[in-house]
Length: 397
Ligand SMILES: [Zn+2]
Picture 1 (cartoon, protein in one colour):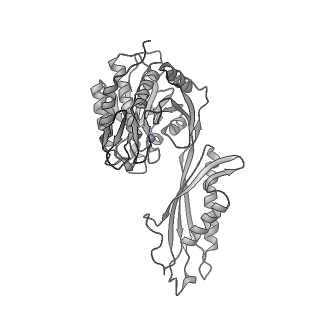
Picture 2 (cartoon, rainbow, N blue to C red; picture 1 turned 90 degrees about the vertical axis):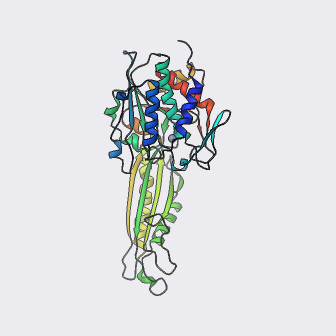
Picture 3 (tube, rainbow, N blue to C red; picture 1 turned 135 degrees about the vertical axis):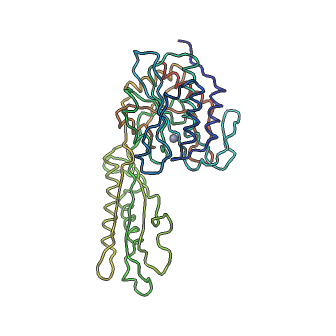
């Protein structure tokens, strides 16, 4: 087989085009439309593209479902495969102004750029364009462009696996270096707690009040003392936890006057581990601490505070075996284009977490995103190009 080449200038143009479209998490309609237009220009018929109804199941307003594209195979003997990437960007990307520098795309606005994950979108459209332009033989391919990855992997979670066809393995593009092959990722819980106390004049009748702030503080002090906060190491298991938001129901200050006993506190946090059971243990430690603290803080009649603690599975951890066919295929494809593949496991969640849960072994590669979720974000064009070539190698190997 001749060495893999792509039309790099056109691929970079495509990336600039996608970076210039705003599409923060939950608002993917415009970028989805642009991706469809670019796919049509590459020769994909409209009939091969459709949206699923994942957005009707996502518990947050979401403009569209996931975009699913089917490319019939030219090698009928080969098993169908899945390529995927997410269309949304973090809210910090709103208003980005991408500019092309020598080997980079940077941003003149004081926002994040959105290379996470427009690099993935451009790499997948480039893959399709090159397969068609160069008439490269390939198996049947399903392409999945997900929504709401950044706000909780929702598009991948709520996709119906039956909508993806009978795919045997998946390749997700969402990372920095092309040849960094992610074969495992952490699992996480998000939790929130409502602490209901009772207001009272803090100077005249302090004993009539029940301070929700005091309940929260005692609970968090307990969690800290017992070693469940931050980096958590217990009985050979490791994980992390965090308290991200501490305020009232609207995210404003819990309590607003020094002379009123605080009647309500709302706190949001998370727990993570590569061990699914340990994720739940960490969340349970927080719940225990809030329940115990609520019983300690009472009014003059002995009435305690009320606590409502809810935790929800954000995503389950996964770890593919080093010798899984999808991992082998990725390593061979990388070597075939003279990249040095490395296998890695990440402490962030990926759409791949849900695909593995849906029964599709999925690895993740990169395509040049850098310093993501910060105002210093940029795209490394050499890695972008490498990611595009690796995608072509994966599809044609
Ligand atoms: Zn991403």
